Length: 371
Image (cartoon, rainbow, N blue to C red; front, side, top):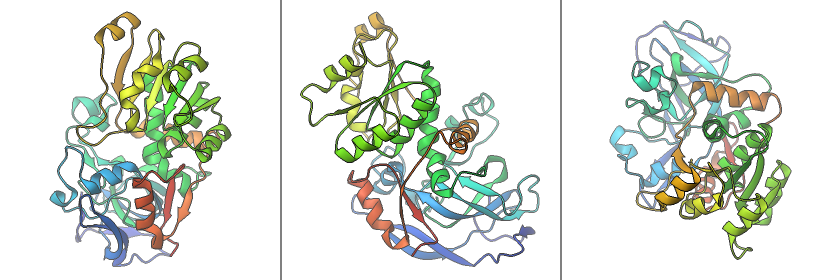
């Protein structure tokens, strides 16, 4: 996949002139004191099998923060020459390479957490392509959706259906579809209890809606009136405020009639206590979604508890092509609603810092067309 100018013949939206430069939220001072600065950057040229997507919106995700802070056990963005984080983009295809066979200019498309995979390894051939050892992670190994124009290979591009706005489709590329994949992986059946620590946050609140749509009973562990109202609005039966309850785990076990059938951990601070929410539930599961900074927030496993209660802990990364499409369909059918806080480019850094500091209920979306 080419990110640089090529001599490749391309087809461009006839009524649209691709500019030479575009706006982008560029990470400055990568590390603990980073900031995002809006700059003019070069528009990439698609290779022969790529499409060029003009993004209208990008969601902001905590993974972006970790990439810019560099507190995961991964090489820094700068090692790959990456200047723009982000992996929740939504926009329109404005140019296609000469060997693109199926996608066309004018189609709406998303930009996901993984740019491309090898398509030949065991993981790719068995529906687990997001675990491909050659996966190219968006916003880390290649410029992400903080840049208005992005290049995506035709073979790994997701189309956005009519009836799903860019403000909703962007976050679905990562947060909502990741939550959906985790719920599917858990194998929960309608009527069973799904507990969401951090369920009032960006990933959690979408997981809550999807769980409700899939017939599950939902309990949120979080804090604050705004997050409580959001949870109730989207179908959570209970909200346990961990700042108001003396024993959060005991309250969860009581309200779920013996313990969660599955705990979906989106708030990494909840990992040390997540197993307690299972109580005595036979076959209860802790599903790991949020990724903590390296060396922080571990789960202390007692093998006896797992053995005698048939309990388990497992993780899910991000959604593959099929799960992203299925999540978009939930939104198309009105079963996944998102009312994000929409900001313009001038509030890019301020919004990223609010997310970093835990000051966001729901999701923030940056509109590239707003100043």
